Image (cartoon, rainbow, N blue to C red; front, side, top):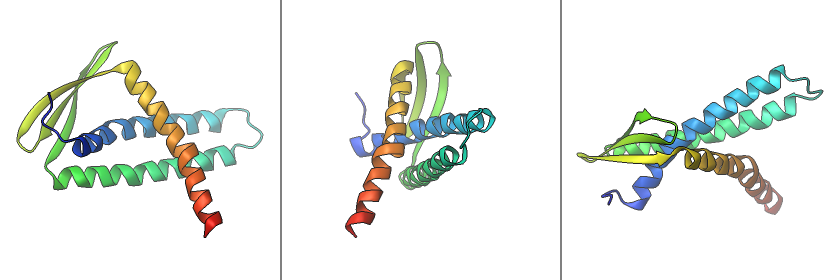
Length: 128
């Protein structure tokens, strides 16, 4: 059982998932730059804009964690699980994350940032 409140746990998980998502998107940009697309720039701009949004949210999560004395460290990984150490206000907790779940959550976040967030901001612009 964790002592970490849900809001703080959400920030910790953002500090885990968002860097993973940035790595995936950086690799995708490299792939697109080398791929034989006729129109590469729109894809690259979309990914770069998405990366900027993710970096802003990651900075907010890191700031929140710093202000609340929260740290997260990746300890070890095998083919099935990745273990993290959460340092929360003087307490230590070990958490195992199932690797397929990490990938699924990263994919969900990618869809959120690339699709939902884009449509939300477009809708706000149209309604303004």
